Image 1 (cartoon, each protein chain N blue to C red):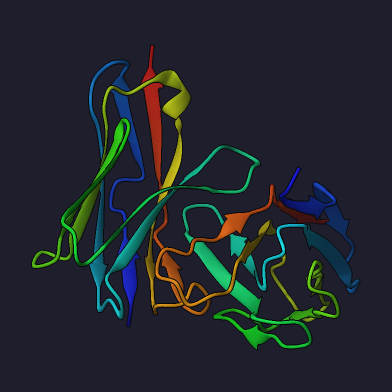
Image 2 (image 1 turned 90 degrees about the vertical axis):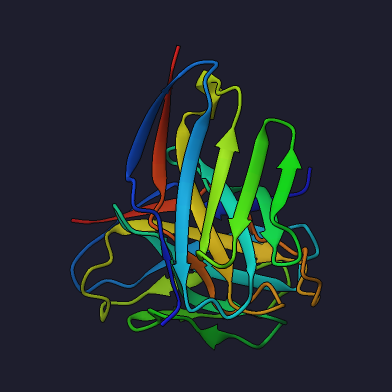
Amino acid sequence: DGGITQSPKYLFRKEGQNVTLSCEQNLNHDAMYWYRQDPGQGLRLIYYSQIVNDFQKGDIAEGYSVSREKKESFPLTVTSAQKNPTAFYLCASSPGTSGTQETQYFGPGTRLLVL
Amino acid sequence: DQQVKQNSPSLSVQEGRISILNCDYTNSMFDYFLWYKKYPAEGPTFLISISSIKDKNEDGRFTVFLNKSAKHLSLHIVPSQPGDSAVYFCANRGSKTSYDKVIFGPGTSLSVIP
């Protein structure tokens, strides 16, 4: 059963704490992405990775870090520098070819709440 | 600055009638648009797309229309069903590749009333 999994579904962060959100895909996709959704706003790109061991900042990368050591995995760390981390975080992947018909496939999301 | 706007935050439609969701864009880098559907606490799922070489794309009950001169696109759902109740995001791809600069609109919440 191919797809994208994200864990945990809910995550609580204390002040000054770093937390890591997991994203795994078994679709053999080269490209992976992290988005953040806030109420009344569209999805905003945090980071993306086109291939293993490479990643690029998106529009709102400050306070976040990522790694891409394996093709299947693209974890996102929300650091203590992120002052407003409460949001719904979505991971996505795509084949990574240059075809115009390519779309992104999304995981179920992780809701991060600050205690 | 590339922007995607969905000016109606919500829409209510009677079951069996047509739902029309609108999207406007500015400064598109690449005329390729996608619609995603999102249920609460789930990730968005791809619904339908359209590129600049077409002005209409149809898939079952879903049809997307693109008016390039007006920088406007719309998603028509007919007939609307209660299971269509979700948030619909319009998105514009900023380049030919899927990564980098996919700009999402804020979404329109559709409620289909039985």
